Amino acid sequence: MTQYEALNIMKTGANVFLTGEPGSGKTHIVNEYIAYLRSCGVECAITASTGIAATHISGMTIHSWSGIGIKTSLTKHDLDNIASTDRLAKRIKSAKVLIIDEISMLPPYALNMVEAVCRRVKNSTDPFGGLQIIMVGDFFQLPPIMANQANQNSGALFNDKPQRFSYESIAWKSASPIICYLHEQYRQDDRNYLSVLTAIRANRFSEEHLNHLNQRKVNYADAPSDLPKLFSHNVDVDRVNDEMLAKLSTKGRVFPMMSQGPKHLVATLKRGCLSPESLALKIGASIMFTKNSPKGSFANGTVGVVQDFDKFMGYPTVLTRGGLKLTVEPMDWLLEENGEVLAKVTQLPLRLAWAITVHKSQGMSLDGAVVDLASVFEYGQGYVALSRVRRLSGLHLLGWNKRAFEVHPDIVEQDVFFKTSSADDLSAFVKMPRADLDNLQSRFLQMCGGRPGAGALKQKSTSLKKPTGDTYRQTLALWRESKDLKAIVKARGLSENTIITHLEKLGQKGKIKPGDMLKLCSSELLRALPEIHQAFRDLQTDKLGPVCAHFNDRYSFDDLRLARMVMNK
Image (tube, rainbow, N blue to C red; front, top):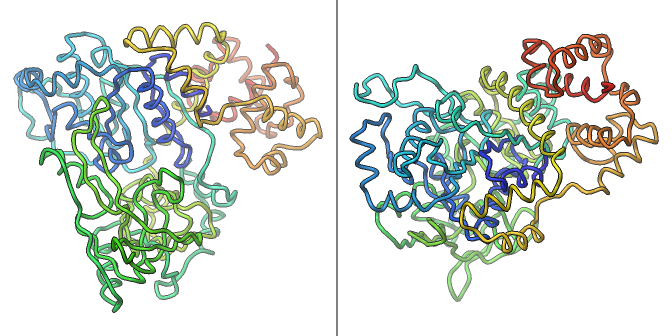
């Protein structure tokens, strides 16, 4: 699914789980949807499972927004207290859309509690009290830290068996979200590196992929000194940064963080801000930007070196790795609600970048990094670290352990369901007449008290990549030149999944005959086609989910998708 297609689905008011590989643009599309809602006068609650993620979208943690705090269970008394707190009740009642970023790090019991709070405050039996719920994240990344629930109060409303992931929760199932699985990749453009990341994600990491990484292995003493180092533990990060700064005998300055707003909200912002409360810099210090520039001159993850300090204001002059010289001025981190700034902190959008933890690197895109995976202890930790880097040539590996290339086995299986559901849901929307889609979107805005006209203006100026006839024509032209799939992928500079989507849509439009696409199938798949096609007919469906379940995952999502493409209806 493309960003544009996912945005169109979100605008209908449907509950959505927005997912995709790192670098697929999840945060970007969320920001576009927030801008759209605001332009239409629709109030949305912007939250995230962690403070760091919340700062990326100028929101607050879901725990703070809902009033559940650090609780691991809710009693009726707890619900009554939350509902009777004017500040919380007003906030929840006014919201029409609830966005939760980094949903993969939210435990299932927490999502259940948020859902119960919304129903109680809004006095509605609908899931989440009738709010549109947009859950965003990638379950292959870091999992939630589970609190000890052994001593839960016997009066708790939820006594489910221990579960790890939010998609297992009662709240998720009651919301029944449409799966929007983004398949385009905007971070990595190196095919060998993409093959490594894809193999880890599919739990098919092999010697071939290890060989690619072995070529990037370096000793600590030989690692580039001007690149950030990613460690799994804070103690390593602090040690490296302190040691490196102390070695510099150059002129330095300390920049304190300024704050405004209630103390508890300011504290929340400080915990999520990647720039420290007291930022000590020296000429020659390796730094990393912690925020995106409104003008596009730097991004969260851009690295550079402090060259000097401005003579007038004392701000640092930084030379980025890309050769751009900038005088860095303070920026604000905001906590907003319904367009109102509740609190803010102001600091230079910088931090020392000799080292950073894998956890704090989430959401960053790095041109290069020195990565130590020798002490990785959690599923997905190695995958997160590796997927921060844009290409293999920018990766410098100090070491690794077995866990570094592993993802949670339950997520591998669940990902097949997410992909099949996304393909099926997209197929239904693609077949929908544009007038019907427009009516759904207009009706949702009216229900929220919004203004459709303002939203239409925003849609025209969106920066999302809209599927155009031109991109399909380019793929079709290469296909008609008898190019195979790999040749088309290379010529277009797009992912294999994107090209297959192009071919599938060209087939639906009658531009390519099903029989002509048989060359996409492996010899094993060709032998299995009669059985797979018969299953589609017996189940009387063109959806991938039921067929995948019928074969008990014997055939992969991609194989079933190709089988559907070559099937004569």
